[in-house]
Length: 213
Image 1 (spheres, rainbow, N blue to C red):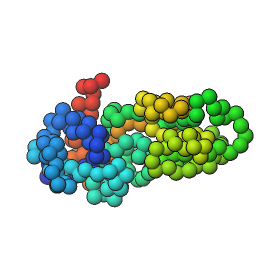
Image 2: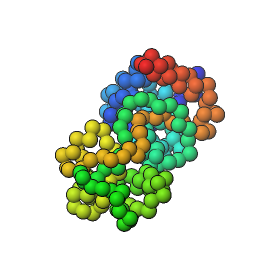
Image 3: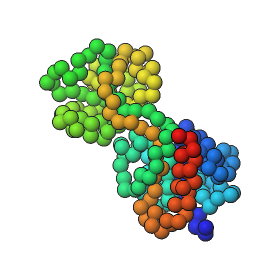
Image 4: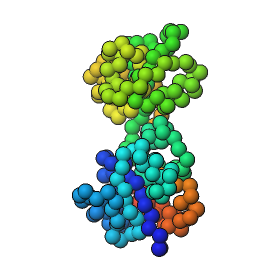
């Protein structure tokens, strides 16, 4: 293999889980475990360079071809979209988008236009369009749970893992919107240009994932 591939990993938990997976597949990820101030990390035993980035930037780098591959949550894919191949569900980072309201609220029992607060307006819009419902969407950057408490919104669409934060704030999930987990994405041109290299990498990852099931 002559061509070095470049992969963008989402910083944080997905980065840690990605490194665990790649190491189990035989890749030496020691440079990524001790990154220092370097922004690009060359793996010593495999032709792969790792870029650590925020989730939306992973998609941007892959879409524009400066990275051949990326690991990013399905939540970011659903919200941001983009032109790339989504090739593998990596199985970690599992959670869900859910619609949550104040406990005891009859959310669907009114004909009034509902206001929904979310950090993910595109996911929210697609969900309610699928139901044929008109809603007013308010984008929130911080703790979205505050919106119903302050009567800014009738409900929220947010990522839910355990539901503990919702419960502590008097909210409850009433409907799942979408399932989320980490996905491996590939640049469309890279898939053709570096087919053999990408196929080798994918096969290593798939073998390790297959051994876990």
